Image 1 (tube, helix red, strand yellow):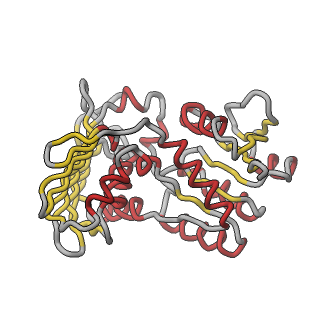
Image 2 (tube, helix red, strand yellow):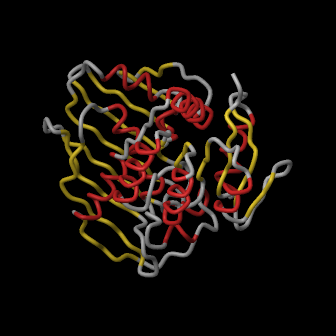
Length: 308
């Protein structure tokens, strides 16, 4: 089986840290080109625009889009229109409308569209989902507190319109939530804290519920120094389950379960290859819908000036 000829668009931190190593480590892919305004990849052809890349390298079969969501739609539309399979870094778009348009275009073109959620591929998420499949969920609590200065340095776009602010990491928690809890999640209310000098929130409190009525609370905060917190606790009729460290540790009834190595991005590229081979798409964007609903239901609070 010939490797899939893939190109990367947006050669920034996430591409260098995760995408390029994962592609290089998967024999199912051959990286043939890259497009980026500010970066390049050694050993392949590099371009400053996706349009120039697609025209000059027609043998490209798939495109991985690693730029921020607010500038991703046009690139995704161009790639799909050219008949290429498309991998969307999370979140899949700046708006729900963008993703719906791309989903319809991919279907018309008969190509794969993959709205990736890397946290769903954390080592213990599948095991948590399997454990909860036959349980009655009574309550879910999410605490996702981290230091924006540590994890998102010099990324000013996150604070601009469409950048999502604290929901950029918070949506990772929501992607795990919607993977392990069956059915739809409904937002009831939220409180969003905006620094007086920023356009996006630095913290959020969200009250949600399952369709059956089980309450779900989420606390997102970008101001936590010291130890970081990425926990999801699910109370069920059979006791408690807790995913910690972003899904890399699992506790059931207080007992820690063995975990495997961190292969989040390796896992999503394996998934993308399978989708391409089977000519299928995976366009779940429920986590983004929950974010959108949180803004719609949100009470806005202005908090102190913040410099990152």
